[in-house]
Image (cartoon, rainbow over all chains, first blue to last red; front, top):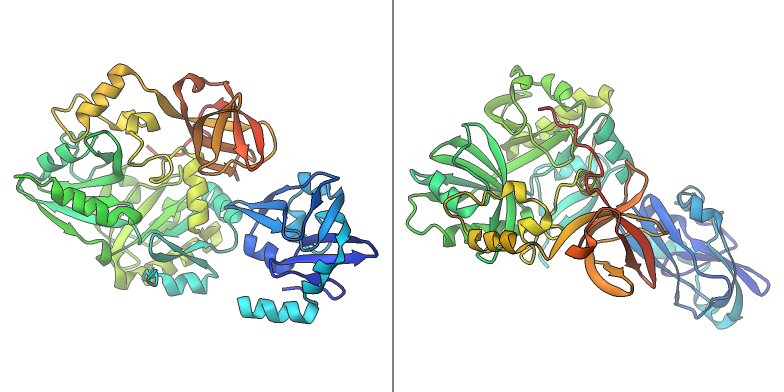
Length: 127
Length: 368
């Protein structure tokens, strides 16, 4: 299982790549593996203002639908439209397949996230 | 919750990389390499399922036929020896206790195969309805292992392991004392996938040996171990019902669209009066197929709407691995059941457009 350096991680297995006031958010390799083959990604609308912990995407495998939670409060600037036609990209390249780009509206949430090493230990405990 | 029970193939599943879940109190693989790959293997080649969780009840006695004729909706009196029929047990109000397969050994000896989640309930129901019939019921669910091999190459693969000519076992017939890889089995040409194939019943101590030999025999023919995940997508595409989804205590066989397994002309059976009445008065709701026209995957339990009003519920829905479409089955009020009727499926916050279609999504490939 791959964990990338330079990203922040949530306990719900989302990753966050902070770029100044903005952040890309996706799901981790651990999450995509646990879900199995992804057949649909429900994207939020551009302009949505979400709190940390809000559902920002629903990811569906053959078997079930799973909520993804935004780890940091933000306003949706862009969604990754490529996932509408090719949801399997999340399986193939979870760290390359960002789901949303948000403008961070409250940086406090970032403090609760894990770094690479902490997330690795967290996953080891879950498994 | 108590620990889920392990079938005699548990170690084999772990060895094959199975992802184990608790299903109806049993530790079983939901998938090995992936639901879609296993689904395609069954449609194109063959897949092997551990279905040891299924329940089995033996019915023996001079009035075994009469007892069953009263207990189930289908006509047991016309069965040949070694024949199998599909039937349902109903409550007096027409709601379904369970669906089952009935294997006829002789007039005085039948084997019933029932759903794992309903074993206790069903067995109690059978005992409650023994009345004065001269029958003995034996719940042998804990003593039987069962493997299903399903797919166009199922016969070819299984034939390599037995001297019995499998082509002589017709659709919905069975044979006892068939040696599979040297072990004594009951083999029936039945299944739950819409493909040709067999269900094989054996003693626990023989299961792993038979499983391994079948995997080996099918290796060059594309056989894959297949989990519960694709078992559900396969049966759904072939319009085979699942108790708890299309069938339940609240749903009658007529509403579910399985009236062909209900013989209302039989002298008497539990639920007959209610079902005759329902048929005479006309159905108020029934299960239809539908196809999504907007984005999203329908799931079991979602509301079905028309003009913002709830008119039904989804019984099963998937992104179909064979058809590559988002489709489902839904119980809807009768006025919305015509083919082509526009409906909406409530998917989270959105009412998404869908249309009623023929529910035979996949044409069954039985060898009859």
